[in-house]
Length: 264
Image (cartoon, rainbow, N blue to C red; front, side, top):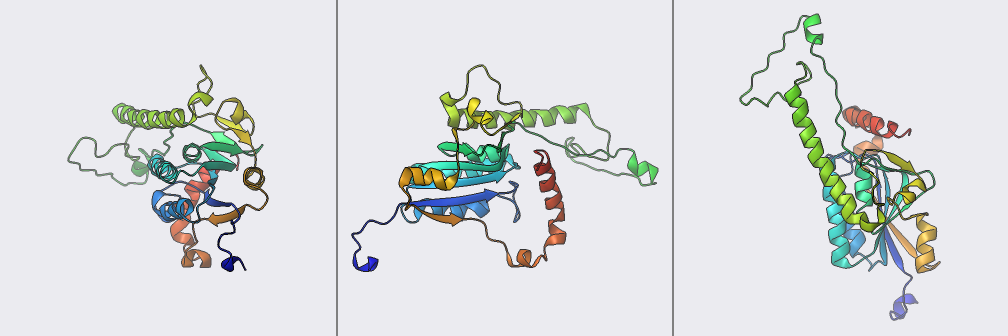
């Protein structure tokens, strides 16, 4: 019947993009390559009233976070579609970078939000090889090619260089948050120390706009008949069979460590 009456208005549409997991280049992480087609469809298909970003990420690559965030803003402005982020367990570090790409940020009472900082961690084994009778041989053309080699003693100049890199990335992160949150951030409060806030605490410091959940909030705005189309990364054939477990182990360990920082 509806096909015979094309003039009848359809129910409002909200396209939903789920972004869950570590942010990283490659097949397992959230990255611009895997999310690009989902975001393109979400903003272009069906003339949506809004695009909702459902975010559950402890962070990861700052570059991928920036690329994804820039794509979201580009599409939102091009299509003139309101964009709303809904935080589940965590939107921390790079996850919060993604949330800031939205026009509004909603959190759950238990959501962990923030961690606006940069971290680099590793191990050093300068004496381990000697104890097992192995000699380390490194040959470089360029004094910095052995930068932070874990099998050599830590060098002050390497640490200084790393911190300069971190400060640069941190400055970009701060600039992104200030540009997107603007006057919502309180004056005189340093929110960029890597600290996190839970639930409504994020509202108090201007990192979120309200406590709320996807379906009721969208129904409140667009009516009870609002429709939802959900877009999310698909699992590959080998992943569905569990056959990629061995190759994915290092990534899984890294991701587990990221989640563990927030008690999850």
